[in-house]
Image (cartoon, rainbow, N blue to C red; front, side, top):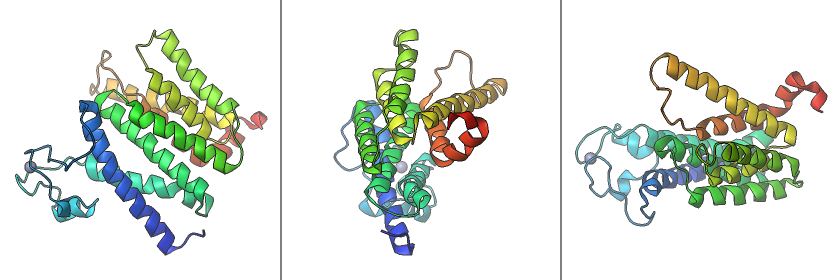
Length: 251
Ligand SMILES: [Zn+2]
C-alpha cells in the first residue's frame, strides 16, 4: 500500500491505541497485576472514565490533570502514547510504503520501547513483553525476505557474554532474547555491531553527565535497555550511511 494522508493517519491511530495499551502494561506488569479490567488513576485510585482514556486527547482536554483530584498526570503517559504512534508509523515512512513487513517492524519497535520503559520504571523487564518482541522481530525478518543469522547471533551472544561475566547480576535471560531480536530487526551483522557500539556510547555519554552533575550515584542500578533501544533506533535509521563513513571496509 502506498503512503498517503489516510494510510499514515491510520498508522498513527493504531500506534496511539497500542501506546495507550502500553501505558497499562508499564504501569501494571512490574507490580505483578493483570492487564484486564478498568484502569484506576495512580493519584487517587478512582476508576478512570472511558472518555478520559482517549490517547493524547484526554490528556490535552484535562490539561494534564486528574478529573477527580486535579493532581498532575505524569507526562510519561502521553509521551509513551505519542512515541508509540511515531514508532508504529516509522518503518513505513522509512521505506516509503506500507506492507506486512513495515507493520511487523513497527509493532516490534513499539514492544522494544515498552521494554525500555519497563526497565527505566522498574529495572525489571518481563518475558510477557520480551517474547512477543522476539516473535515480531522474527516475523519482520521473515517478511523482509531474508534472515541473516550472524546479526541475531552477535546480539544474543553479546548479551549472553555480559550475563555470564557478571554471573547473572547485570542482565537477565530476557536481555538475551532482546539481543537476538535486536539483531533480527537490523539489516546485517554490521548494523547489529554498530547498534551495540552506539548503545554503549550513548549510555556512557548520558551516564557520565548524570554522574558529573550528581543526578546519579556510582552505586545506582542504571537501566541499560533505554540505551540499547536508542542505539538500535539510530542503527536502524542511519546504519548504511553511518557504516559507509565509519567502516567502509565492512561492506
Ligand atoms: Zn486523581
